[in-house]
Image (cartoon, rainbow, N blue to C red; front, side):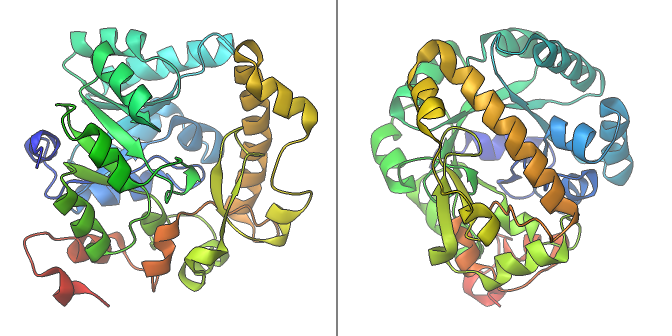
Length: 330
């Protein structure tokens, strides 16, 4: 097994190679802090922190630091030049993160070259979300420290291939691989670590915790749903997003219309189409975070193995890899 990610996490103060992935709407500061405090590694989603939960970015990071002295990371979504205002905002967030002592960046979409340059100057590790081998190799060549392999079982913006296929194609890539998607309990985690992954990223399992500030209806839907209740739609971000099948999700169908479909096929227009879709998706997710009147609920197929809402401490005890996994099952 490639253990360098595990070593990085352990050196940073984490007890298990488990990352709580950045989520909209799930990544409230209390959740991020609880995951890090109880042995994992929380990752901040800046838009969630500021726009959804209303924190000034620096104050939000400082709040997390009052709740735990353990390390956490920050996620940056890279839209290139499609939105200059967002680009400038991201630069500000990055500088604040550096000043507040963050040592782990997780980048999504786009090319992380500019982020890498700044990060290397400040001793910050950078991992990048990848959907396939082509992107994974490109990220390795541009110098990322590790890759976050988004498989087809994940929630939210999902991948198109299995965890097994990632490992088969990239077993010799020589940088750490994180498995992201479809893990709901300790056996799920053990299986992917046994494949050779250096760590795992989970989202849905941490949504169904008491520290997460989404609605009780959303949490109960995760507990009550099965894998067959997960559907894909491209109407949220322009690529496949995994969500729980609800009347609100199914209204108007799961795919975009012909104009957006065309834009998504054009390299010069794709980023604009995706940003427009994501802005609409954010509005719906914002409503669903605080009211069960709107049921836009992201989740991955790992929910089939989530049987109850727990505290983060209880979840992390289940994932204690030093104990017998079967003994920690509910």
